[in-house]
Image (cartoon, rainbow, N blue to C red; front, side, top):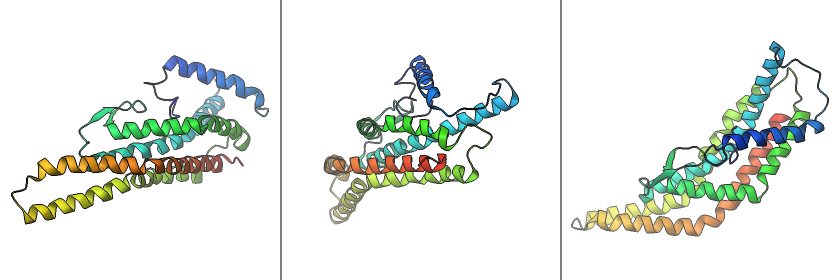
Length: 233
């Protein structure tokens, strides 16, 4: 429902997601520790159901935050470049985002799949039933606070991705400001716009190899946080 890639309704149809969830359930149930029988229609059963859904949503939300850092990085890069008007529908969220955000998200998705991130997420899901068994004890207040505070990593990761382009374009704008002051007859819009856009693309091309280790580090931090919250070693 909330996991990146598989949770995107524009990428994976609802019926496919339902079949995938049922298939994963059938595969996981034999590996789970024995659980006391509880009627699913009783008050206790409904509370446990809601509790387990919230735990799963928290896990998927953490992964989604890592992908949101790519979206924010693309947005922070596109705006100073002058590409803020070039929007496209984001398949993950179904909203209009700059083209660079979609480009970074697609790269992040491919990197996530290449490092078997989806398999690691399923492994953490299986281990969570051992570290945090089905019962009256769910996520603690400290775990909820950890999830809330981890949202700051979205802004940190996004700014670190966009920082080289922001610095270079800022220096270019300062240079054009000095040139305009020295030569007021210079048409700054005719010269500055293509220059900042070309410089932005050049910086993206040069810094793109750094996207892999930065995003992988962010994903590893996500999984470490998930294991810490769920009590999985």
